[in-house]
Length: 148
Ligand code: FES
Image (cartoon, rainbow, N blue to C red; front, side, top):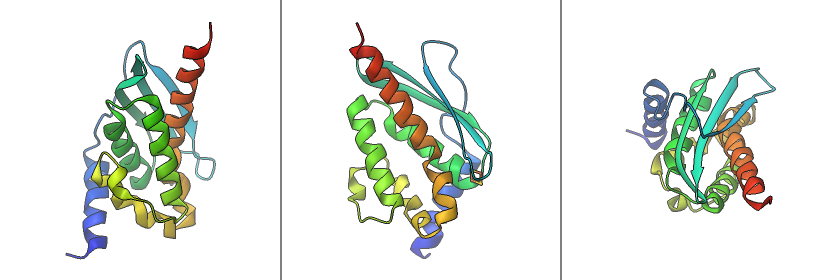
């Protein structure tokens, strides 16, 4: 099997059997975003306690790339500090810009399967949607912690 086929399988696995799809009832930071290029929406929730992302979930509609990316992101951030999560957002965004990044830094190796998306500019917004929601939610939690 070629590496492209393997990556495709990993993406389809997350699309067809999404991890952490669902809704938390309370105590979670919720960020709703839409992809301006297609109108698809995603809602990402995080439960953050003592600067640690204890749980992350998502709901939404979108293409295989966007939903697989959300599945991977929510799986990867569990147990990370807000700073570690924001570092991951930066790493992922650099990978989407076609930069060589150290993919070993991703806590979930499946994320590497999305690196080929960088070659398809029209799909980059699909892949980054959930990560933008993470960035916004983690940023907001930081603001709340800093406020008196
Ligand atoms: Fe809408 Fe990918 S086409 S999120």
